[in-house]
Image (cartoon, rainbow, N blue to C red; front, top):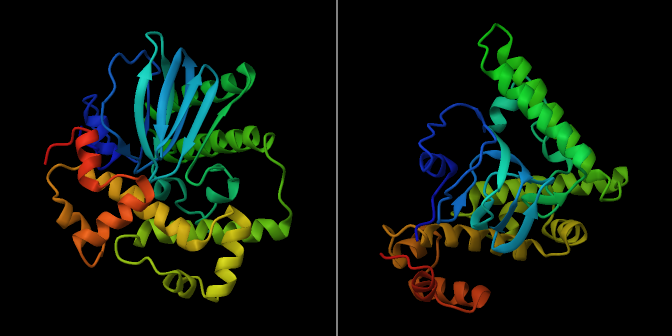
Length: 292
């Protein structure tokens, strides 16, 4: 079983050529899903409208049914495990650069607190809330078909509306942080983004502290308070996600993966992987039936 490197490859499974800055689904029943895991390279908003789905997100398993909402950031790894015959969902993929064009704050999406579990949130909401989001998605699809002078601006406005409505739904399930806590959250979000962008080359806490212009000690303190984890643990989690994706590519040998991830040797990579998963990289490939 191959792990798709990105969402483009996954959409090609459905003969969808997604080269635009956004994609809106039809919401029709889907009778076949890719067996492989895939890594998101877009932001995504998915609404289950009927039936049930078992899904694995960043190697955690969940079940979702009607009125469940998944919102995910790039780098999230998703795998469909099982769907009921009547399963249906509406979804939106969009590129951040498209959405924040002409907007001065590059962290405007992150400030909405959409990703309560690192890079994603999965929540069950009311039929009324679900219908609000579905109607906005329908309106978005209708407007995106009309190529007019202000089509891009209208599409951006509707996507922002969707994200804000989703953020409001999530907010009811979580307490509102104080202004001071918001500042810490911003730092954590910047730290997480830097890791996603540099994980193949850099994994020292000092590198990320320097990039954020703060001391190593302060970074450890803030990340621990915000996430309950040390910066090193967050770095290792991201590195492990990257390893999973690369191991899913049968064209890469384990030694090539170790080199790409900056390990000193194949055995050092094997020790790291086994420490966090209890199995070796080769055993993982055998378990997942990935033929190199």
